[in-house]
Image 1 (cartoon, rainbow, N blue to C red):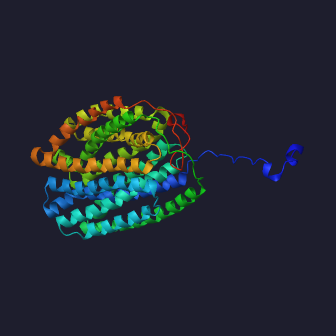
Image 2: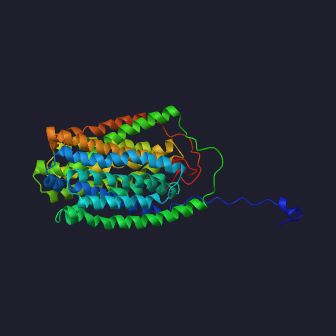
Image 3: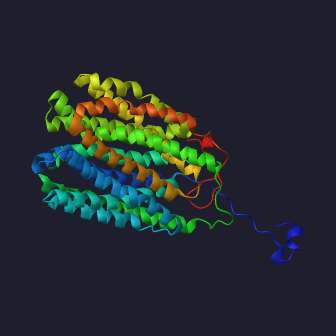
Length: 426
């Protein structure tokens, strides 16, 4: 202490400002929510994977199968934005493990279902569990991102895609040989997810307690209201194209392979696994690449890059069908993390609402698409469906209407970091 400072009264001695440490990427937490996403989506993916078994057992049409998916997806779709909107204002950290308890109940209901209506009810319960999981888990991934939003969102999403890829394998090994009641084994996956989410929730509570309370106005978007409305409309079109097309593979690719190439159910499940594994790999790559080269560039490549493969697939033999399906899954899936982070940056400070809208839109479009494609397959055949779905990636030209990156975001609270995404380095 120098003489000048020593001569001042105690209340005049300046207090050093606390050092601001840059946010860190919390790998353990991002990995934990990705693992929980894997377990959650594995449970969900088993449902379409056992559709051939359910179709034979209950004598269902393609349209009735589509309605099972529609009920599940729309239940999740309608609830997710409301969950995100509510928890933006009134955080409910323990909603994550509690939502997985609901999924556990849905697993039990699916294993015990003895009629078509009971299958519909079980799928709705699983949809409720999913609705509570996705917006809150996406929020935690962003909190733990250290500013690398695309990387964290990509890691979170690739956990879900990996679970979706494992679903058909689990179904073919554990469920198809033993029948519908073997679905009950998925309870172990739900219980493991509950345990992981309790650990995540404890970290989230500690992180929230350590976060200084921000003063001042709410975060301001760098975009005008008109640009936000236009951008969200374009994102809606892109989500429509992406998830109708991917939904055709997720729900009906096994039927396509069975009808066109006379494969057995278990062999067709392997090809579905290859497609879903490619989706997981593409999702993993899309986030970090978007952090470096920009979200819009990734979106462009994701849609227009996949269009030639989509056009060729309905005319290919079995070997080339497998290669093209893997290429389509790899390229088209790379856009999802970019779309989610782009939407979050449009409306900063509303991570829960935006995540709920994005995941809700994904589930809603997928569900409506599954029902619609099922109806078309009943009238025209499943091969016809894949032939005309191939044009959907061309809607990616709408990307040109997305606004250019705006100015820096105003950051308050754990959801937003003092970085513009274009300046973030891995």
